Length: 158
Image (cartoon, rainbow, N blue to C red; front, side):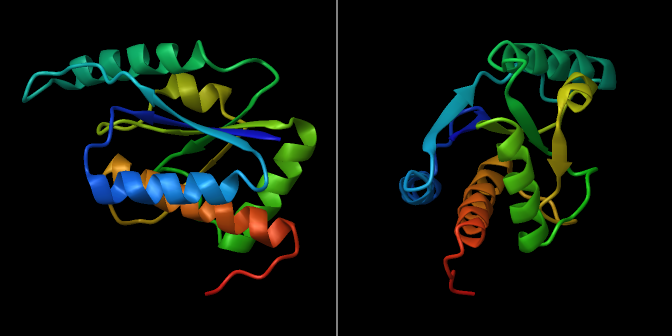
């Protein structure tokens, strides 16, 4: 199994980068894993809704160019359901049986384009609260690691 995490922009907070590296190392015991930083489309300080949509569509097209038809695309989307850790583990298990290539994609500061939602195989939300996409990535890495532990029958401290 291969798992690729795609994140717009490059995180500069060292404590988050350290957390990414720790969870990528842990996940690597279960799958080949990588984190890909995507280019964020530049926007003015007060972009219009049309400018935001155009930027999101450009970001989506760049991301989709890196997704093969056989890949399973999983979106983190504030508009999606809020699964429990067990439900997420079950969904990851089911999706990984369909294809051994999973891609977890987070949106940029303004969210996701509908182009991504149309291609996605599964979408979920982490919380009803708002997080930076860099913090959301750390939470995603932890939940994917937790899911892999659950699916392998191993215990994970609560």
